Image (cartoon, rainbow, N blue to C red; front, side, top):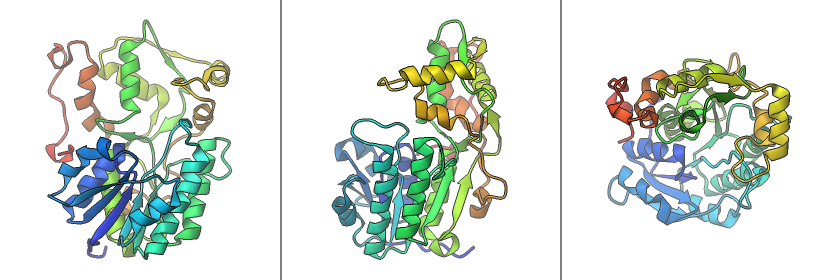
Length: 331
C-alpha cells in the first residue's frame, strides 16, 4: 500500500451524523483541514473540538442544492459524501438525497478538481431493488460513477457504536415492551460493522486515492447474525428477560403496509422490503482486508453502551466491567 499523503483540505458532506463525527476525528488525526457541510451549523458544534484550533470549519449546505455544494467543495483536495436517509419525510425523498444529492456532490468534486471522492452507500444498493431505498442507493452509485469515475464507493452493513440507531433502538424496545419481544424477519442476516472501523476505511480512501480510487468495497463485521440471534443477544445484554415471539411474514407485511406511512412507524413498507434480503458482504467482494483493518466484533463494544438499558444500569448486580479497548472509543 502506498504511503498516505494527507490532502490539505477535505470537504465532508453530511458530517454531523452518526458516522460523520468519527470520520471528522479520523481525518483530523491525519492533520487535514476539514470543511464540514451540515444543514444546521449550530447543532454541529460538537465536531469542532475533534480537531485543533481552526482545523474544523462548519458550513451550511444541503445536497439537494447544487450551488451550495459547489461552493463547499471549491478548492477541496478530497470530498467525502456521508449523506443518507433511512425513511422519507420532512420534504426529503430517497431520490432527492441518494440520487440527485449524490450526483450534486460528485459533480461538485469533479468541478473542484478534487483528487479523491469517497461515496458512502450501503450493502443492498441495487438499481433493480424492489425497495425504494435500495434502488435509490444503486442509482446514486451509478450517478456518482458517471460524474466522478474514480470515486471510491463504500457499502457498509448496519453500523454499531454508542450513538447508533439500530442496536440502541432494539435495546430500548427490549426494555420498554411488555411481556414479549416480537421478531420481524427472524432469518434475515446482518453483518454489523463498528462505526470507527468504517470511519478509518473512509479516511484511508480519502487520503490515498491511488490505492482505492475507482473501486467498490463492502464492509461487514467479523460475524454474521440472524435477526433472531441479534435480538436474543440484545435481550440478554439488557437483562430484559423477555421471550422472543416471531411475527409471521404475512402479518408483518400487512402491518407495514397498513401503518408504515404513519410518522414514527416502527416498520415502513420499504423497510419491510429491505428485510427480505440479507445484509451481508457478497462472496468475493473486497472489504476491510483491503484497508488492512481487522474489524472489531459487536460483542467487544456494544455491552459498554447497552448498560444504560439495564434496570439500575451499572449498579445492576449482574453488570460486570464492560469490554472495549480505550483506543477504540471516540475521544
